[in-house]
Length: 639
Image 1: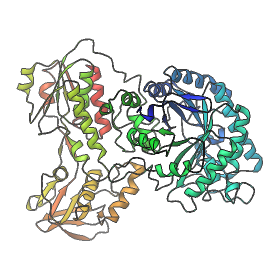
Image 2: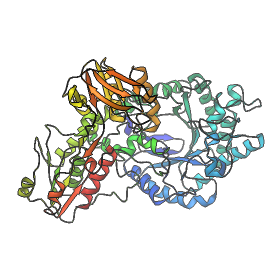
Image 3: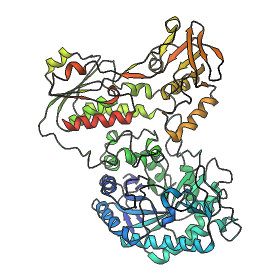
Image 4: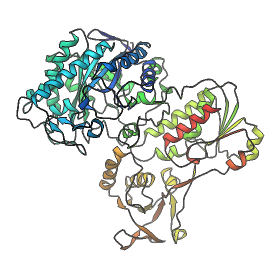
């Protein structure tokens, strides 16, 4: 039987070639004024070329007072139509249908971006946000018309349908939720009143675009971790009212500080809110779009079981825009895996940064710049180091037609990916390691492990270019008595190379130290983490940091920031606390996670011996997987 994912689907008058939907995801690739840019066109066209059936353009604000993100697309005026039309044409070239998500930030809009205070159903600010002004009934009517006119513009631009954004804490959702709507008039109180704004928007949109034009909405199936938040039962009631108002489908998401859509799980778990889509599916007859860490395999199952009609796959399409085409061709093993790291989401909240990035896909948002072309002249390329940077460099060099050899001094490939995949919540990194190794085999890279390169050996091979991805050396802090106790490196602990006692002190409170502490706590160890700095785990993705630190606390890990190291004894570690107290922390094992330094021993010898020599990854400077993947690819593209 043909895969259900690949069955055509009809949404009102819109014919989709398959049931894979790219949901709206904020990118910040547009101009400061909200115009479509060349960068955003390339981004969306790559996903259309990749084979999705329906692509939904990210949250596009419909009113000047609804701007929630810098460089957010806008559809509040006819002047934005030429850019939208050009984007639609680029998407349509590849047989993909396109919708736009109509959006208003409400209290989530930013005063500093708009030059005016935000508005909301009630004067209740979002966490860390500006205090909004309560909308008057006349202002509500103006916004209802704003949604309708934006939908009409979308239709004029050739967009195939519109999605009304009623989820994720933005304006429509603020009306729906008792947590943000405390009004005493006809727009607040019971379910019917709280749904009134959404229903008026749907009806106004339908009036201007006609009955044949696809219109649907996205709502939360549940709000997690919010007092008086939307319950699944309320979401079902909202869905029924929206259907009665004339929508053609309903897109079920979720939000809140403890939503499973924005938090990782100890082991990667797909379809984290599929039960919410199933609940809505039971009470409406219109198609239901499911979302939430969906994989193609799980999407197929949801379709088969009748729990959804369309499958939205989001961040996985950031990691690999060709995912649908690869599935259709039976090449699932070739899909670049999303590692569920949340770095793309974190980029939205990083001051001074505009434009999301992907840990595993350096080409995200740089599709034109990173377009792979065959090498003008095939060369002999030698890669030293089989971590993320080395494997990505070797993969790309081979794809471009070079003859590539890679040596790794350890018994297996992976480098620090092996250690990084070991702590809880990090298992998807192992999938990336497996993918890269498989790609090396597929591209014909000659790989040798347990092979440490020397200058003489490299000269014997006579390579045209050398890429050094030699990683780092762990730092050993200068603490008196460090030689007197059982001291081991965090990497060796994570790889199982050393045994650890029941009482452990971890020296170093950045990401590696804290993740090692959680790894040991899960194995019943009593763990204390120390660091000189004032705060722990600053290198953890900001949107996950509080969740991570709370986990450590719940698992009994003691965190001691702001210490001064006095000495290490056979009994443990002596520190001076930030309060000025001299304290002995008893320990059977001291684990060092005190940082690392670049390993560049070969570079001075090679730079004058080989015409092209490139340093990539941590041997340039200890950083992230994203940096390693990016530099590996860039080096390979230069050769």
